[in-house]
Length: 149
Image 1 (cartoon, rainbow, N blue to C red):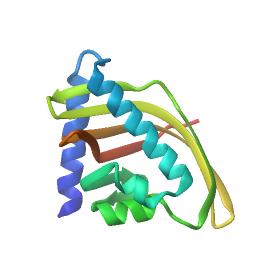
Image 2 (image 1 turned 60 degrees about the horizontal axis):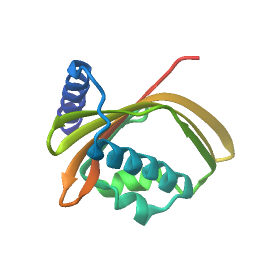
Image 3 (image 1 turned 120 degrees about the vertical axis):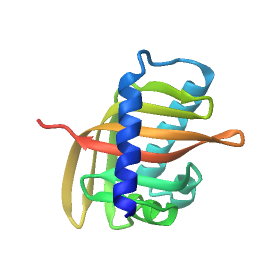
């Protein structure tokens, strides 16, 4: 049940972003882009506390591995202690205002890590949905779509 519901949410976000005519460069967009970059820095460092501090429920993660929902599960998957040699390079970000307190940021990422002794490198399109939580922007849904070589 959660899988279908989250897939619908992800589909709706993609449709809304596709309909957004222009990327923004306002103060909210700049703050969100800084937070998005920080999530990658915490991912690379496997900093569970820092990473969790930038997410909010439902903390949905949509990847080739499937759909994960829940802050604890998402943090556990993304800060896996068995993976090492993490690196990333982010492309230009485009931020789209959905409502005053919901934005979506889209970009390409090249990242890699070694898990279980096996190195892997990924080229992906990313979208992250942010919701205003008090004075902070929190990531509530992120999706990654693999790019072919």
